Length: 411
Image (cartoon, rainbow, N blue to C red; front, side):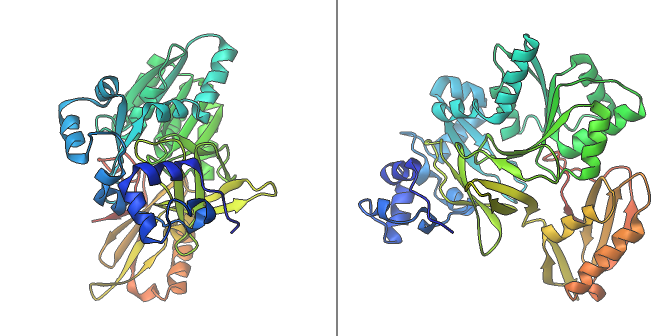
């Protein structure tokens, strides 16, 4: 890996964050020698680090986690932004723990320049009227998606928020009533809506669609385009970056990375994404290891692309022997089953040694999935350790806390 220059956010963090100053000093990195080391030699941090050291990372004078959480109990996020000039954001908790982050006003202005807004602004210019954007997500839980959707509202964009846990029929009724030019939601949610409007011969004509947070399979992508007849942008968004830092138009493409917002790396040991947010000084995140498993490639111009987003390492399939967990099967191996058969969605329901694969498809592909999965078990010396069943279903289970479809569900 070629070394990268030290970005300005590192200098800022060293000068203003007790956590980073102590972390780097412990690693033998002093302020005067900061410019002489490679960026890749800086220590990597984790979510546990930012949870344990929140008060030493935040740079807003007079604020700490206890005071901020007390304020969150009393007031809404945008009231806090209006009164105090910063925005608190909580992560969804799909990586097993809820995180708390803070964004200052300059960071929010950078977010307003992200690609998602640039798409909308271009379409505003084309149609010469206010653009109607609908966000379908998990509302009322103080998550980043809802906050980001509200941030896009301006004199040029009208935003309507709808809870993803609404029934499909009610969701479609709301869409018909609002007639959005742009829609943003989870991939599985949009696919459910697409199937519903196709089945009921409902005509909708948005300019474009945006999905995130879940795998978008080729079959899902194809059926969504057939239903809506417009482009579908697959966004790679992390709460730690808040803005989109990757985008693609087809499931087989690489995610284009926006270098002005973040630096990205792939951890050579684990394959996890390592992210550095370049614009948020209120709560700097430098060489932060996410739970996302990725493949990153560098093109001939030195630009990085996320070739594949393989899921989260917490969504591994545990293998048990006599009630004791003996190994895991990685998420990337599980995702490969999407390519073995033209299925729309897939889920593993685990109860001890019993594993049920539930999948959504128009046709029966149980034999193909069973053959592929047993081959995978055989390659992991686990074929005799799993009691397998496979079920074709209309819908897979959605996590009621997040509205997302978890790849592995424990019962």
